[in-house]
Image 1 (cartoon, protein in one colour):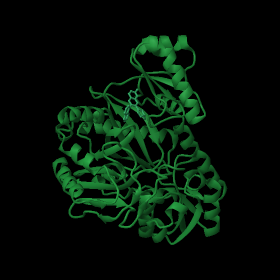
Image 2 (tube, helix red, strand yellow):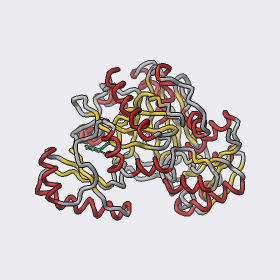
Image 3 (cartoon, rainbow, N blue to C red):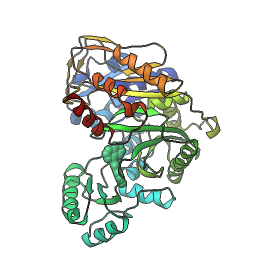
Image 4 (cartoon, rainbow, N blue to C red):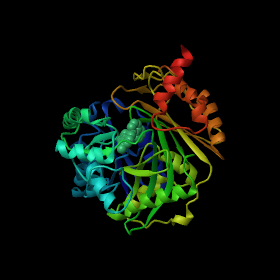
Length: 452
Ligand code: MV4
């Protein structure tokens, strides 16, 4: 087993990794920026090293400093968490060449899934359903016109190097095609330094459903059910839950097997997530694969009883998966609300000093956070300061626990989006489970009407 893991991340996920390492008897090294010197990961890790100034580019994204910290402390593995360098194939490669185990899949698999057009082509070859569209990149306008009329408008143009919603353009008719293509290409080039674009049929009002998979180096792959992630704004998820009310056991199995096929096809290692779009007729389509531990892994942990962080570390160490598909039982219901330091009306970040902080507890409530009373939320990073995870025997109980937990989550000194969460938890369509990727836009329209 690893002796010492360096955590190349900050905030709640750095603490979550420390939890897992402590339970496994592995020592930890926290790296931190100047803005994070008073953070809990720094306090609770066995060792810590400052890797640079506050800006991410000079600290959490600065590969030479992180590698130097690993060498100085004698760490034998690096956990990247999510965000920052978690899906940077080059970083995974550098770790490897320095004799450090990168806790994640092979660099080639990060790279493959990072190119969304290549991922699409790879998955298509394995007979996993993908949205009708181009085989790879598109560039010739006449070819694009004939493909678009073949699959039918609307179509969506996406950046091959993108993902997570950046650089996407919906095209409603042929007249818009050329101008939208030019815009998409320009945006892709400036955002990713790569202007390749591919085309898909645009699915109207889909659900975003993702399947958690785990894989060992001996070719064993198991799926751990789904997460419903449709409630998002500007491609930032707000609430996730497991299981999804939209899936029958039959559909769950079909999507699980499709996700498993993706992982098996490439010899994937560790934890991963296969994202699908589910249309209103119950058809699902592969969209992307995330090669990291995700923010919302918690809801899967709650309904399966599996500690995904510990499992991820064991799998990276080359251990055999101690689970069979038939061992996986989804029981009860879990919901995660992401608590952000932001104005609930304008969504502007609200960094600053937390004057009072009392997280709720009690049956079925889990809080993953690195915040505390007196902590100063820095302005340099993501605004998420806590995840509230409610578990119940069913969705109704999970929702009622979430409500009372959020009502009693005392945070003073900064603004948070807790009022927004409470409003969503009262929303009729949310309560009915009638959600899709446009839920938040519709929610704001409904509430505009109500408040005017
Ligand atoms: C789509 C789509 C509809 N049809 N692709 C947004 C994030 C990126 N991963 C892909 N996204 C979408 N791709 C086709 N062919 C709708 C979205 C989409 C979306 C997907 C998941 C969660 C939220 C979303 C919000 C708007 C659009």
